[in-house]
Image (cartoon, rainbow, N blue to C red; front, top):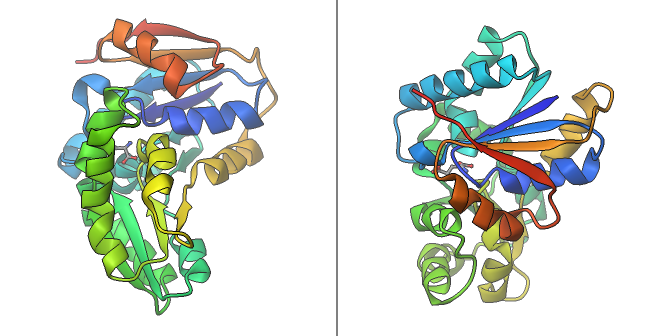
Length: 254
Ligand code: DGL
């Protein structure tokens, strides 16, 4: 079974990619909506929360765990790898492909505060950005909007303009979606970007990595746990996981 975790519903963007690539594998997803956002929390608290969820996923029979959350990847994945006898796959903003694709020599990375402050993030940028200028921007409203199921409209457009305006003004021609909640807004973001500005997401690359590590297929079931409101998750699912045949449960975590 493939275990997946995120601070909330954002990681469903990764689950969707994994489902497309590995339709026969059993998947258990934990969305920690009761404790969302992770992006404003301390790394040590994020690590402890991830340990609790990984223990649960291990008990459920996870053979591989996908940290479908950039903030949790940055704060916790290195230590989790030393603590659990399981392969972990995490999210990494695609700095190298973005730097290579940029013609203006300026790229933007949209991510949470926790991701942008992480040491792992700084290492990634200094290793892969080459001579390209990197402008970073936390986008907390994007997470709130996606958790509420608001994927378009004036509030979304205003947040997009606020967050992308300064980066575009600085000449960026490639923007990286460095948080798993943001791809749910990619259609709205694309509609407001000038021609020639590219948007890069890492969900598909992560699904390919999971495919290369996963064992034989299972029963193809999808089980989703939320630490938040079950009825809200069920209402959001047709929007965030269209066509997903999932069983949903509430999960109480201490
Ligand atoms: N989806 C998460 C990420 O990829 C975090 C959103 C949040 O909880 O702040 O970083």
